[in-house]
Image (cartoon, rainbow, N blue to C red; front, side, top):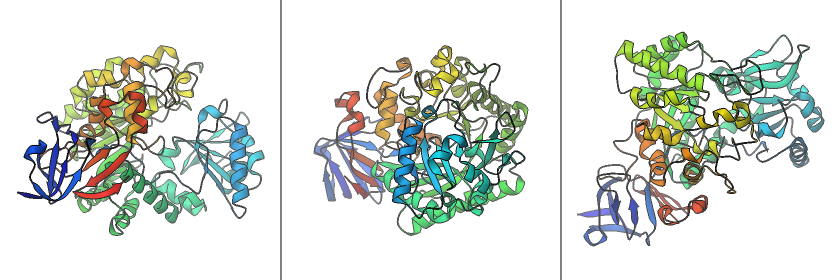
Length: 538
């Protein structure tokens, strides 16, 4: 046998229990045709000498917003710790963009301001130009007075296509808009923002964001991307990137199912799934929300938020309504990705899956609970029992993002910290863990996620937060490869380096198993191969 490509002198971690390690791997026609020892390697037209470096399966990022991405045209607020720093960054941007007609910012951290921000906080920094600020998780929007006017928000118009405007005690809009991820990122919400002239919502900006994120994913060794929230309209962006040769990682696009989705929409989703269904671009899973996020107290908790009286947050559907909805989708053969962060929200989803199985009979649905941030111990074993995948983002549990002194930890209170991102408990209970970045909510680099899963520490080190829920390195890697492949019904050709599977792999600058965990974030991808073709060289 003469292969197209041979990788030799490698430390190949296959994530395949039948052959955990190999020194060499041969590829032909885009698939793996042989694995074994260097001495037994076949001839090949091209040889890659790994020089003893680690080879892993290509990463499968199970929740990566490449279409939304990070927008270079926005003021970048990541790391801005207070209003003064936010003002300095906006001022510098305005000086560099004197022609701007809107100010758009992203990456706002809730902890930068005590309480929820208001238009009055933003107005002195922005003047008469309309300004909007997206939170780092893109679940809320903060607007100044000029933007509120431009967007048509007043005391009588708070239920918006792109969110829910909050009011002060006098019935006036505060400038803080919740439910942006649920409404503003929907088809109708996005169209409304574009019609109102918000530049961020324009088609050209969307395509630029997508291309930047796709390039970043390829460079990080992410060979399969799961884009978790799209309208049917958005699929044309992915098809354009593919036709222009810019889609170098495989992509699975989930379709957004907001409240109000009807039979006609489901038929459209089914047609899209039939149209986009190959190893490079697939559509079909449905994205739903049961609750929102913990920091602004909009996730659904079993017990009240710490220091907020009886407030426990709300679910977007009653338990009975959601159980009926999921049962209907399950009967139609759809896979559901359900955003759930609070323990009551997660329980509502698990109860709905249990109801669907009781009504429809068990099937290999692989419904996902996405985020699993605050999980009651009683619900840990239910994931494996119900065949529900835990799609989690390890970086979110880092102490410098969610730990003591941060809004997440303070909102739930110390008595519930043991419920925070219980990765080890879920793994030990037999649940499938599908790890992901949630870019651009957090860094896209899988090394950052793997490091956090293993250490539960911040990127600068320091004390670990809830280290008893960390996982070992092999489990973290499996979560970013085989776990995420299984979660998306592509374990037959991705997720491990196995004869017959697609030749999607990455060659790392360091052996993760031979370095201290603290060094993992510094590891880089030296080579990325998709379908036997080199798509990135570091």
